Length: 370
Image (cartoon, rainbow, N blue to C red; front, side, top):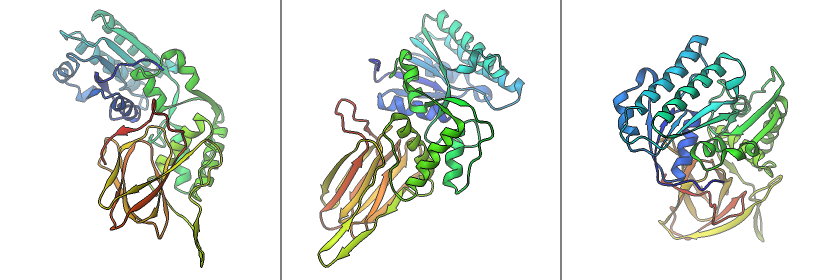
């Protein structure tokens, strides 16, 4: 990992897209002040100059990848040209320009040509203002809340399975995959470019579907699939982002007899884990944070509580009113802020499970109110 600076002023284009959302998440953890810029028909040079003036870094993500050949070529070049022109009008320009390029940049396709020429335009602009330029050639990205049926087969497979369908493999080939949070870490400087290959995964389309289908079948009954590798965990978190649209809660079976009761809280098919429990006084709220990669489950053992989750950068909030007498497992989606409040009159006892062993040096816990 790189010794990246924190609390910087960063400007991002394409901030409303899939990679833009993930990049803003990574920047939020760094405490950066982030401004997003529109390009294309919505571009304002005055707004761009205002945002870029005195900034530390420009991260150019905006691009066109699904359109006519002419729109792909002209659109990508236009976006890069707009930013290049804005950069040359600054009295205090950013020290670095980062471009989200593609591994297709040199494959001879029209899209590849568009990305290559965009990179050249931005590189020339960066040189003219004395800024360093970084072009990161990204492979096929997957991750939470990607757009199904667009340009990410992983998202499509997850969505179809969650909706009760059966995906089909139309063309089986080997893919080079990267989780969007890893791409974001490369773009913001959390991860050095020399480590890019270490976060890439090679998998066939059919193999990818097999992995996701197995996770779907295991998670459908409330069990955690094998997430013993980084790729499996990232793939599971991606799948869970679509499952969250249906439900993130699982009813647990409580076995009772004259001696008392017994409830199984979690069953994990592979990987590490850490369990803990907390007590919470009536009226007290815990949480107010989110995780980028951590898999986490809450189960109220005794008392009453409201568990709330909100997708970061949105107003999408889900509430769960839970009671220890009717145990319910609630899994926290990655990059959703969450909290738990004791809504009863008695002490609240809650069990927590996470897939990782807590590391104070890398807690993966970012403050964010629900």
